[in-house]
Structures are given as structure tokens and as C-alpha cells.
Image 1 (cartoon, rainbow, N blue to C red):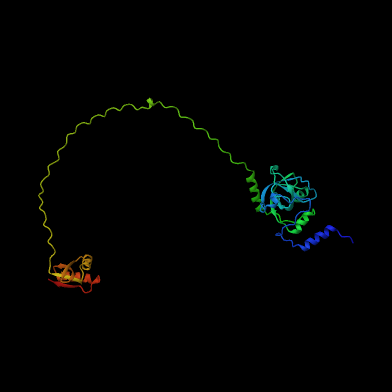
Image 2 (cartoon, rainbow, N blue to C red):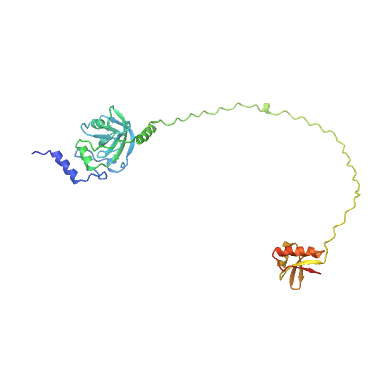
Length: 292
């Protein structure tokens, strides 16, 4: 039985190499460019952009594209912004930045993406595919199917594309200020002021003579007197005695080395007793009524 050489090679690579998205794809076959600043410097590892893709690549029968940002040997997911359809393509060469679009898709890649015209709005995102997908693209076969972009993502991508297409805001022209007309200084000079009329002289009216007071001044109230006092407390310093006396409304009376705080005098014992009771309520329980 004759074996298909390509099928056997594909089977051996698939079995011997784990198909993980993190594995770096092997280099492209001989004859495909793998050098260049974008492909070797690592500067485009996170390339992700929205723009337009043209159709008309020369690599017929391959699912590939030429890019203005990614060098040959890279891989990219291309999403159509009108449908959300997403495919994986191999970057086979470069186009100049002046081309006006991000990618030029091969006819087969455009067919898989569902592009019917010569131009389509797309998202281009560089990826590191699984080995099995990289080998499939080299063999002219499509990679494993990608999930379509959800509507909410497409809305955001279309907004980004519209922002890129919007022209810059126009700057309003500045109109030079017109020169104000010349002002005649003579015309602006105020007329001379007329002298103010002198006020008529006013004779002063004499003030009426003050009448002598006939009221008799009242005599000053007699000083408080009495023979009853309330002795609130006795202190060894004048300062403490003065503070209590001020708070109680009393007076300080020296007595040898001590100082007494007393209230009064009061004319009657009843008045003195009432004052003593008030001192007791304020914390001076030893207060007592004394007589001179």
C-alpha cells in the first residue's frame, strides 16, 4: 500500500508535538521570508489593531496575508467586523504603510472570512498558534475553527474603527480685532464746572437755659450690719481662703496663722442660719453661726 507522504508527516508532527496555544510555531518552509525588524525584534508581540483588509494576494491556494505591521513568519487572527467571523492566517510578506490598509488577504483567506468585495473592515491580532494549526496553514489547509466574536465585542471594535476614520476637529479661524475709531480728546473734555452757590447764613438758635433741679438726692443705703456671721471654713493659706470666699460671696478674716472664711453679718439668727444651711449644701458641713 502506498502512503501519502504529506499525510504521514502531518501525523508524526501532530503526535510528537503537544498542540498548545503557548508553543511557538516552527519556522515556515524554505523560500518564505522569516527575517525583518518586525518579525525578529519582538516589537509586535502584542499587535492588535482595527482597520481594513484588501483582497488580491498572489499566494493562491494558501490561507495567508501580507501585512503592513507584521513580518513574514508571524500568525494573526483576522475578524470581520460585519459578521464576527474569525480565521487564522499566516503572514507571508509585507506591504508598505502607504497601502492604506492593514492586510492584503489571499483569495482563499478572503473566502473563508466571508469577504465578498475587494475591501472589508477587520480586526487583526497577532497570536502564537498551536503547532497543528501552524502546520495546517503551511499545507494550504485551514486551521481549527475559531469562535465568532460576540456582538458586544464587535460593537466596541466598530466604535474604535469609527474613531480612527473621524477627521480631526476643525480649528476655528481667529478673526483679528478691529481697531477702535479715534476719539477726539477735545470733544471728550468735560465743560468747566459752575461755582456752587453759597448757602444762606443760618442764625444759631440759643439753647434753653437749664432749670435747676429741685429734687433732693436720696441717702445711700446703710451698710449691712448685724451681730451674726457664718463661719464656713478655716484655711492655712490666704490664697485658698480667698478662692472659697469669692465663690461663696464671703470674706477672709485672719486669725493668727490661719484664715477664716465668713459670711455675713446678718441682723437676725434666722438669716444667719439660712446662710449656714446653704453653705452646708455646697459641701461645707462644718459651717456654723457665730456672733461677735
